[in-house]
Image 1 (tube, rainbow, N blue to C red):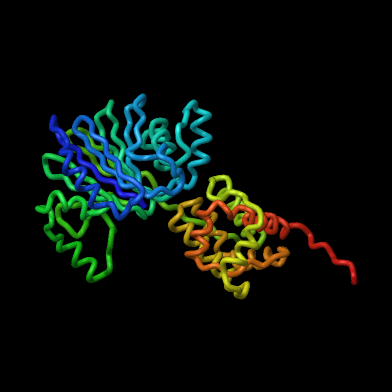
Image 2: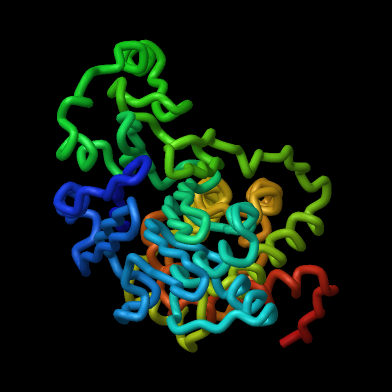
Length: 361
């Protein structure tokens, strides 16, 4: 995770540099790999980086495009950034880095706020449009990445954590009793714009907010969940599972490396295949809920995942060891997994072909 923070000074004022830097320092635990800042007319950004995809300095933030007059700070990961990059290159965009940060910025340059609905991932971001003198804040569909803001009348502050705002504006440390009571009574948390502090609000999940230099703006929803249909036949579930794995591979979540099944054997202790079936089903539900990669197919396939994967594994020469959801998630962010996924895809496709009878020995 990374940390983002910033201050928009209203009217003709300048953003207080020391306050922006102090906010970023309060978020160092979120980004140990580097810090950066940007200051423009009435705006200041701070960023602490946890490098995940592009480890080079080419993806350091704040990330700017001087030709477009845009500056970005971003926390999270865009899972379909490879697909988006290809599409943007076809539209004439040229890239100077290999990560998802630049893809997000150029997607915004191309589609403005319409870019957010195209993103599969977990993210919170802030974009400063120098030409329009607008600050754009956005949060992922399920609100996995936090984003808080405070409007004081002379400025708008935003940050990944409330503590960064309170570090420079301690007068905002006034409890919001309604939010506190709702949490104690029902466990409500991050249900709307309210936070535990009366002067700090949360940008709702699946929303973006465009603020002008006077701090005017209202959150707008860019995404709503849709009802999913459950497959009625096993073949339909297998086909959905194959489609999902293919999309994950094309989205750049996985990169092919031979011998990954042997690596599974080396890294994890032996266990029964039924346990693996359960873990895969849980993992698919996790991606469907958190990862936001084609929700509807994930929910459909997850209904039949144990049976489908069980039959698929019977076609494999090697039996991978059981993986917990946490370990499986970590491995899928490691570029050494696609070989296993491709084997699984082939096995699943084989399910729909007639079984060949084995000659008698």
